[in-house]
Image (cartoon, rainbow, N blue to C red; front, side, top):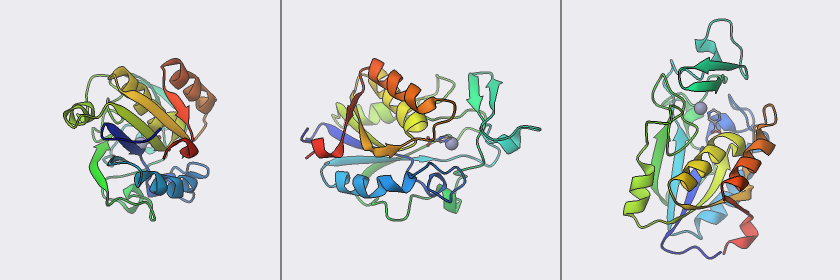
Length: 208
Ligand code: VGL
Ligand code: ZN
């Protein structure tokens, strides 16, 4: 594909806490930085997302008595994996990865700000009701096709890609510019769900 005026590169959660050594490290998470920087120069429009939680966020295991990270609990909106405390608003771990180019981003969208609701998706919070406004902002700019990259494949990338399809965007995920967490088979599961929803899997070599 050759990116044009109606294409957006959507860079998901390339933040310090998701890199090796961070609070919720994604294996090889730092490997996405170089390919994403190279991709950005191909696109006219780039948007970045940031996981951006208050200290009392419901997804943090240490906010639930007797619970440990990677356990699943049932919340009013459904199942929720509990995570190590990560991407706390304004903390160093919530910052963009050092080395990630951020200057060309037209939009930076933050998500997961409601203490009671998680938001893996850049479009729709986990209550499946509250919208971030990203779909409307992209439509107003005439964007019809999204190319996703970043972290983590099986959570924020997958949920964003599935919601992008739901919102009517042509949606592609760059397989060599994403990395996954993989808890309980989540990575294979995510690719299956994305493919079933019509999300196309491409590689950086197909973009230029
Ligand atoms: C993410 C788990 C918790 C992600 C964010 O960016 O994929 N995963 N919060
Ligand atoms: Zn999070």
